[in-house]
Amino acid sequence: MAHEHKLEIFRGALKFKSNVSKIWGVFVVLSIITTVEVALGIIRPDFLVDHHFLALRLLNWVFIILTLFKAYYITWDFMHMRDETAGLRRAVIWTAVFLIIYLVTLVLIEGDYIFEVYKNGYIKFNF
Image 1 (spheres, rainbow, N blue to C red):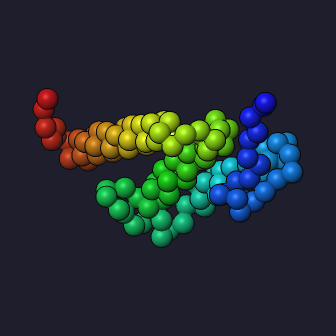
Image 2: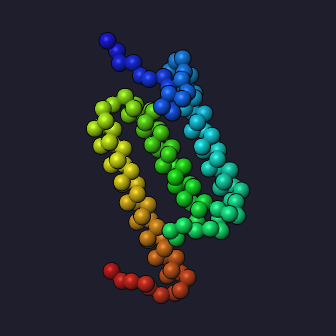
């Protein structure tokens, strides 16, 4: 007996009749999010560019959050994580989430260091 995959997304809010229609539905959702990212990158709203949160522009936080959402959603739907056991889902998703948070933190720390060196012309700390 073959395993049947769920033909719904967003916890059952959208239901599809076939796998093909579901793939197109997921494609549309991911395309909309990507279009929003590209539009924000082109328009660069003043409110999101001028305001900072944790030493990073709000626009950059929007990009990070939307990209993480897309990565999670691709893993959830295309890698069929929603059909797996809770333990496997947690092992895969939380490992990736913590790794991404760690890498983003390192990039922000190193980027701030390089910015300060170029801005002030001195080395903030030596290793």
